[in-house]
Image (tube, helix red, strand yellow):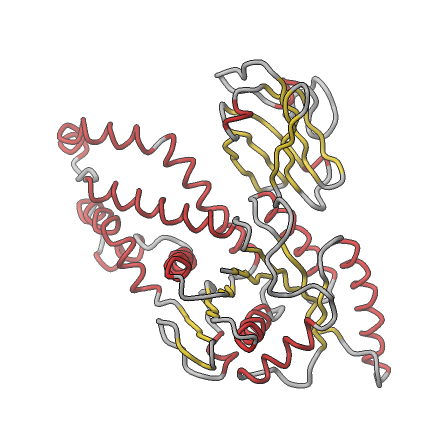
Length: 414
């Protein structure tokens, strides 16, 4: 099963490109579902037809779904919400305000990911196309399963045992109800489901496709997104440059735009080496409906030899190579410079920070027992050298073990 996620800066036309790609997949005979994780659902508008909370058939082989967040929220969060409401009730908070506070930020996007999991597990689809939220929200969302996994593996079991043992005392002392097993079970279930989503989206048949318009600010954000998606282990399989002015028959005003866009598109080519770059010409009117969307997709994807539905190739952003003295961990960070990357180690975790984003990577067992001898950023890739010798249990930083990721030695970052 092929999974393609579309994301980009708000307003670049990612929903239209996601819908058109799904229409093309269905026209080729593949049973296709297009699903929105964006709270501002617009797939119904793109297809020009009402879309329900269950997969809605809009053309042969083509189904569209806009997730009913309220229903999924009640199924996945109900036990946790009931406990939080009981705590706020003891605190004397108004019930309506309390209910608002117990809805987690970004709940719709998270629950849409859980819906993606259900659809993928059903085995009903050859292709699932996901219309994601704008890039910043998408990055936070895709980082969530691994971040929650770190908490669940290291803090949650201890917290659960402690509350279970001291529940009577804590309840009397604090004056508020302590969480019961149903709350902990719900958190564990949510974690397990999100982990399944991550395994699916970082697997060999899933990838992210970036949509941009030929504008300097938009391209800069797309470059950062490419770096951060790679940091979290997601494959990017191509870039779609949308709303490109055609050069033929341009008047003076449009000719100026053509020249400006051509300059930016040269930068796009340089920013995403090795990735297909598809172009979508600016149209006099928005494509609405299955037929118009399919025509758009055929025109867009005709510009590159790459099959737009083919699964990505290669090892993915993270790989490990062995050598005579130990191993080297490779993490693709396209576009990142050495001064942007900071590396540390905490037990079996490798802590990689790029700008304002941080990933806690649990090392594979084969290299977790080794110590870090050095690190460097070369050609858009972080390379961490591991050699024989026990890693210190109290935490070991790449700086202390050898070279810093930025190439300097012996000086701790403040």
